[in-house]
Length: 162
Image (cartoon, rainbow, N blue to C red; front, side):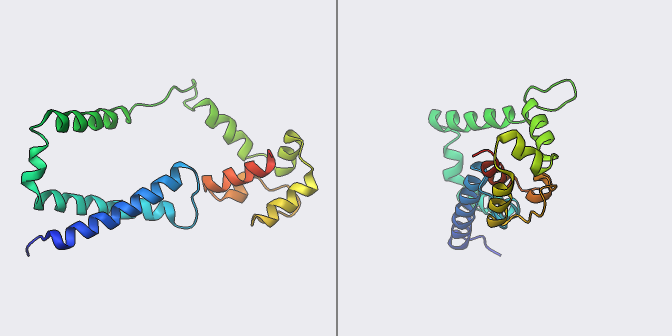
């Protein structure tokens, strides 16, 4: 089978569009539906498409390793990739301080968070229900309501801490 740019390029372009849009949504914590899963799984298709595209464009690809601009840009991203494996500063127990605070807040009942934020409890429960979060008496936690979705956590906290 011959690898043809006529099908590799559109696959790479389409996968790039999907990666870019879902990546931006995740960056701004607007994760809805299957955005995160699509980003994770279709990244495999994007990588495969990019590798096949590189294969079909070997000469053009190798040219960039011969110019100072190409080497500079490629080196920059390789350094950023290497730095991305470093861990942020952590407390003695191994957690980042902000994560520790959010972890504690996530496990507190909505009633307690309403009290903490100064929000009217009854009004907050109504707003949460209107936003699609099933709240009965306020004993539910953010963790219960968000179901592991950071985007949901952000929506809940924006209602609590208006």
